[in-house]
Length: 360
Image (tube, rainbow, N blue to C red; front, side, top):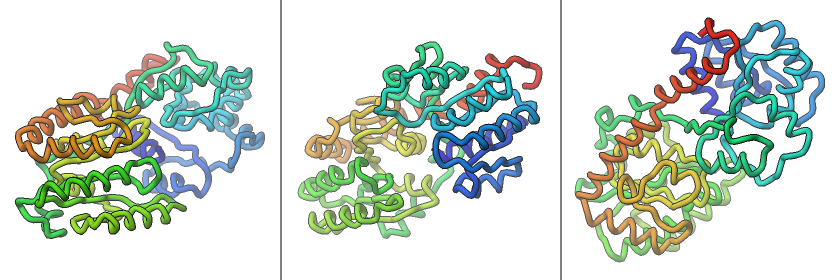
C-alpha cells in the first residue's frame, strides 16, 4: 500500500500534475519520498485524534490552494476530514481503499467522515463489497480501480530468463514452479510445500523457486516454513530471499503459483501475468478479479493442498496449456492492469469531480 502511494505520485508527476505529499514524519514513506523532488509535509500523528495536527492540515489546505486531496488510508480521514471542515474547503477528497475491515463503521461519526469523501477507489470487487457492508457509503460513491503494474518493466520480451536460471543452476529441461510472497501466515506456503512434496513423487524434473522474506516480527514463521521444506525432503526447493529483480525472477519460472488464503487484490499475480506466466491460484477474494479459470490460470479450492497438487500437475504435463495461458495472461494484464492506463483513468476521474477544471 505504501509503495502504491509513491508510484501514483511518480505517475502524476510524469503528467505534469503538481503533487505535494503529507505523511507521518520519519516513516518509511517519508524517507522514500525524499527522492521524488516534491514538497513534503511531515506530520506527527500516531493515533486517530490529533487536534494540533488537524489544525496544521487545515492551515496547509488554506495556504496551498489545492485542487484535491487523495489519501490511501481510511485512518487518515480522522485527520483530513476535520481539517477540511475547519478550513471550510470544498475541494474533492478521494480515498483509495486497499484493505477490508471486519468492523461495522456506520455510526454518526463515521457517517460524517465518509459523507465528505467525493469518491472511493476500491482496488477489487471484494473491497467494494466490504465497503458497502461496513461503511456508511452508497454504491454510486465507489469505483473499482485496481492497482497497476508497469507493463514496460514487466515485459517478457525485455528480460532474460537465462539470468536467473544460470544463477541457480537450473537445467533447460527442468520445469520451474515459483511462488512470490511475503513470509506471513495466510499466503499459502504450507499448501504449496505439501503440493510440491506430492509433485516430487510424480515428476523428476522440477525446481521450486520460493521468493520473498519475512515481514517484520515474522522471522519465526519463515523458519517454520523452511523446516517444513526439510521435513518434506524438498531438496529441489530454492529459497531466494528478497529479490529486487522480480521481472527477471518471474522470467525464469514456467508456472506461477498463488495459493493465498485471502487477498484484497494480489499484485504479484498481476506481475506474473504481465510476464506471460500461466498460474495456479486459489479461488479467493480479489484473486477472482485478476485470474480467469481455464483461460489465464487454473483455480483451486482455497486451502485445498490436494487440489493445488492436481492443478499444478495439469500444467506440468501440458506445455501447450502453459503457452496458451501465458499469452492470455499477458493480454489480460495489459487490458486491465496497465499502470499508465489506470493513472489516466484516475486523472480523468479527478477532472470529472473538480470544481476548477482548467487546472488539469
